[in-house]
Amino acid sequence: MKNKNILIGLTILLLISVITGCTPNNGGGSNGTVPIVVTFNPQGGEVGSASKEVTVGSAYGKLPVPTRTGFAFIGWFTEKTGGDKVTSTTKVANPKNHTLYAGWLNNSFLGKQITVTFDTQGGTPYSAS
Image 1 (cartoon, rainbow, N blue to C red):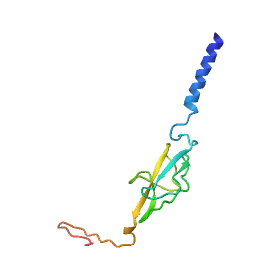
Image 2 (cartoon, rainbow, N blue to C red; image 1 turned 60 degrees about the vertical axis):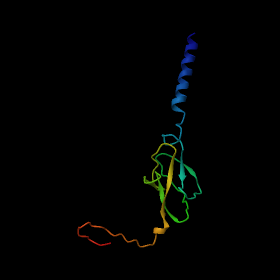
Image 3 (cartoon, one colour; image 1 turned 45 degrees about the vertical axis):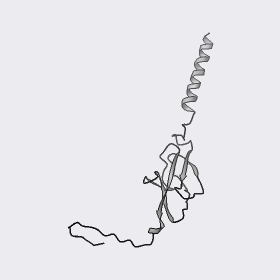
Image 4 (tube, one colour; image 1 turned 90 degrees about the vertical axis):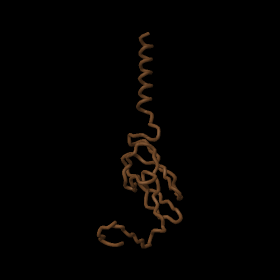
């Protein structure tokens, strides 16, 4: 009976250690060794590599350069609009699988002079435009 209780106890300890210590979290691990998948959302453009594996604490490394007709690519960002810019030297801080979003600048604004006029509403302007 004593041996049976010891065997049951050891089995329970083994199960607990497997469940808590050996199973990676869904969506990548936070221990810096389990690969995390980064997905690239080109937001209307085309990208050759849809995803890559990275490790927490390491740099993202080489990032794909997407293309989109009529737009200039300005970088990868952590949010669809705004967010933090991510470069090849940015260290991975998000411990879960995540998406980077392409930022675009409409080419119609490139190389064109745009005039902005300020309405001072009765004040004295520094410059009219």
